[in-house]
Image 1 (spheres, rainbow, N blue to C red):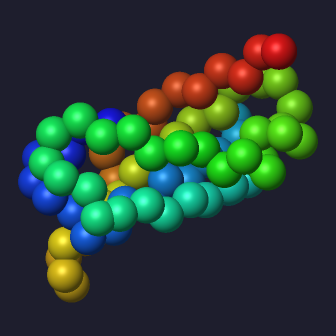
Image 2: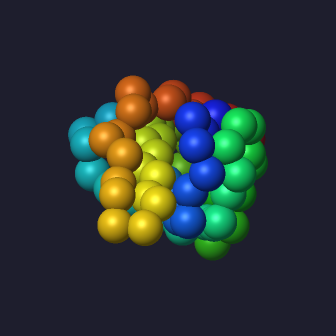
Length: 77
C-alpha cells in the first residue's frame, strides 16, 4: 500500500463480495510511501478461493484517514 504520510497504525479489513468482514490485521508504525502489510496467515490457510475486497485505514495520533477505495484480492490455489 502507499501511504501519503507516516502512520502509527494501519488496519486492513478483508471483506467478501457480500460485504461481510472476514478478517482484520493491524500493522505499524509505517513510513510514508510504499509499505507491505502481511495478510493474516490463519485466515489465508482456511479462506475459500474467491474474490475478496481489502480496505485500509491509517491513523497518526488521534487522526484517522478515510478508507480509500477497496482493493481486489483474488484467492486461487
